[in-house]
Image (cartoon, rainbow, N blue to C red):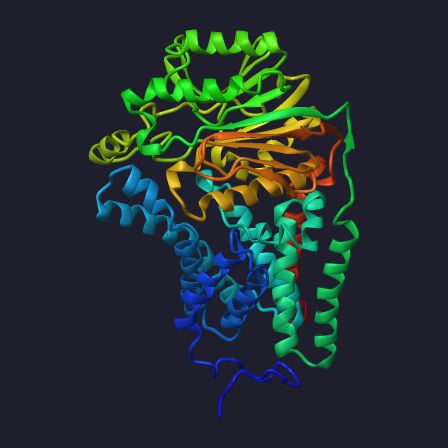
Length: 513
């Protein structure tokens, strides 16, 4: 009876006889979503990609494209279902349009994997251990890196995030999230080699897995940066104002009173942080309120950092921004804007009209400057990110040369009680690991958190409840290896692995010549 040979003596035994790769590709890809927070079944990241690699093993280029598409479609359908809440429930988009937008994102993400699968089968001749342990892992890493920046990019659900609580997270400060992804895919390729390879290949593959995990363990708790100064006290204010109420006129004074009341209880804390767009209004409309809060904070010896929509009267543009009120006001403007909500590419007039009708009244933001300086507050240099721009790791490297703390302000209320906030917290943890610095996360309805320099969540505040998360944090200086060199080492290494897959073709041409 035809079956997958679990103990094949060599690769001559084909896996094509297994007829269910195509129908199983979608659920196998969906299972990858369970490897991310809040489920954290991290072995699925490796096992599911082992399935994909097996599904590509003896597929035709067309079959490889189809299976790759279905696999990634499963991952993004299960991993980004929460977009339904923001688009339909909060944004009041028609159901048909909601489905179109969500499926369009899934299709784009899936097309990358389809193209990779097709290209591997069409143009990369390598087989055996070179394919399993070099080519396939490298191809997935390059895919993740490319889709993280191409056409603005969407770096969500990179495999490396699944390992924030394992020894493999030790690779993050060395080479960033994509290096952790490479470790994951190398393990996946090694599993395939153990299934399909001969005795020597199996031993080598098992050794690869063992070495990766032992290296991860050896550097897992290594301190790459050093403490500077004394710890400072922080208070992270979580207003928990529902998104559907946030911009209602009758809610404005209640929201101001809420944040004012929560803050006044903690005046004297070194650093007080409010979440993204905390107060419903523009900075000049709230000038009196902000001045009063600044005066009270300054008198108590506190610095106040808050998310605030800002209007520049000279340029006549809006910014999704952070305002730091300490010795003098300072602004940071969000650089990575969310397409179709914070800025609008060229679209049909009817679609743009609907998008502008969503309950984010000041849409059409302008992006902030590249490589901004950190903000000075509470005697610290704060590296700021707003919302999902903390997913763009390499864009935050320049500021680490002087930053002592990381701060992310966000509003995940757009996604309701879903996995989105947990996934976003996991991304923030990876940024702390890569930078070797503590990260303070202020979220409108959670998950507000204090994250240690090793990525461990030290404290969180319950979701959907107004309140204040307090604690002490240790400023740090110095650069991790990743902060010094960025993604290029792992990307170059991955391309070299792909070139190795072309060696049989190169050798054949040399022989013929």
